[in-house]
Image 1 (tube, rainbow, N blue to C red):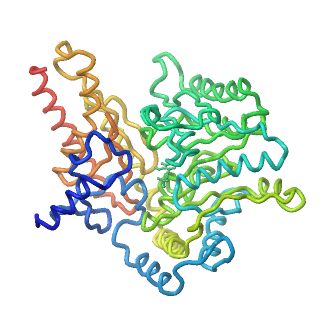
Image 2: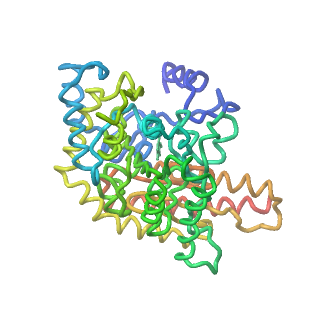
Image 3: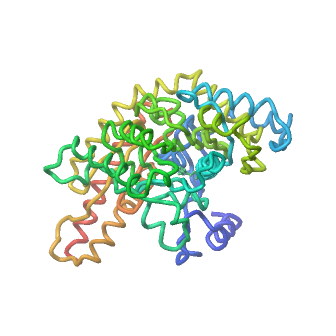
Length: 466
Ligand SMILES: Cc1ncc(COP(=O)(O)O)c(C=O)c1O
């Protein structure tokens, strides 16, 4: 390692505040530097090559090093790098808005561009509040969300996120939110059927609306699959039931497709083809540009816009927007990305390889270290239980620490064997680039299996000492 690289690494460790930075670790982190990428692979600072299990952060759909997207961005930067979306328009984001609206279900045809997923969610929530103000319903402002949901890191988007361990140190708009219990079917009692669990989860939403008062509830926001919360797949029919309940009480349904949009489940958007719903608003980001450049969008139904436009507008202005709303370089990247996904049949490819992915994922459940496996489409998660061997030797605090570290231990063994995963506490999550081949899927799961075995061996070896 050159001394110049070491000094950059020191700077990163000491001064680059990364997302979700644990402040106790400042100066100590020593993260892997991801310096290059091609296809489904990334390379680190030493030139070692890894399969990128999480596709960056669930986003690099078409893989790394795509010259066509890079060229489209370069061409656009030279032709016209930036215009003010407040006062002017440009044909590239305008064409992208039309392309997106063509792919959304129902009458979701109004596209509001943002800088990423959080700002897409924030804009959706603000639009919902705005609409109720214009409709003369200023009390109808509460958002219903769910435990384990993740919707972003701006103030409102973070406020509707339901991951408990993110709630400790930052303020939230708690007066605007209500959280439903976890929808993970594996948490149900042994003697509860999946049908009765579905009834219970639907009733949770209806009861919440009745308890708060329908006149106060503005919207229900839901990821089709709760991704960062650990790839939680609600029982079949859940979203359909929730949408029906929302319709009954004049509550809007926001489908947060920041992860599931743009091919992860084999479709442009998962809401209609996979979950049988046409929501009122869809939010997306990530796969929209395959992560090559930041961009998000909030897509609103014509019906909602009609309610608050023209003669119904009362002269209102939706005072929400960003310097980079509809940035032309991002829009050029998104258009090229969509063209590639279409031309190369990537959605069909995802649908054809998903059965193998799901089969290999399910098979991981046979290892004693694995408590639960979950997933759908090219989204997978293993949840570990480290209760192996010397169970009697450990007190609860030790057990908790051990459970927490298992995801990281598996990821370490994966990295030594050429695969990066995303460890989250006692879970490992993976969502590879959509262009992954069948043999690469086999290779990826072979490495995960090896890493699970190695981690199990480590734990059994360490057990007598604890
Ligand atoms: C479902 C969902 N919504 C919103 C976001 C926030 O997106 P961003 O990080 O681009 O702001 C994320 C990020 O992971 C997400 O998973």
